[in-house]
Image 1 (cartoon, rainbow, N blue to C red):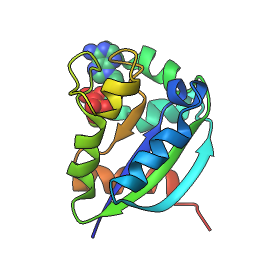
Image 2 (image 1 turned 60 degrees about the vertical axis):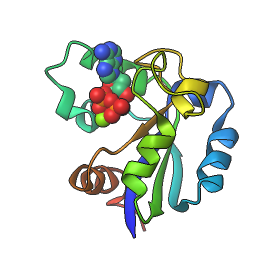
Image 3 (image 1 turned 180 degrees about the vertical axis):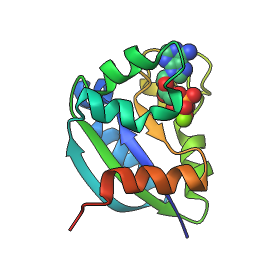
Length: 135
Ligand code: DAT
Ligand code: MG
């Protein structure tokens, strides 16, 4: 069993497609091990995306990710990390494959509806970021 961190980003929450995305997650066979809605501050968004701090899109990305509520989930499954990345599709919705969430619901490379961890160590760090203080 593997865990990954998934986020429904502010663009998707504003579009009222939380339910559609969660339905897809359950249809794909993931177990949802944790789920909460929250609103990141700009500082928290900067901390979460610190790996991208030198990228040209860092300020814009962290403005966007702190612009509204998000839904944060822990997804569990045998190959949860790679499976969730397949279901999301490529970062840029314009090149994401038909049937992927980013193809279906993404608006741009920044406003791409969903997030997923990219490796076991990243998944552990990201889950800890959102869930370390959970009761
Ligand atoms: P992913 O979310 O597919 O793991 P990433 O880790 O490379 O992609 O980037 C994190 C987020 O940053 C991505 O979901 C959207 C934003 N981003 C990435 N590349 C970008 C770019 N060229 N322009 C604007 N935003 C970008
Ligand atoms: Mg990434």
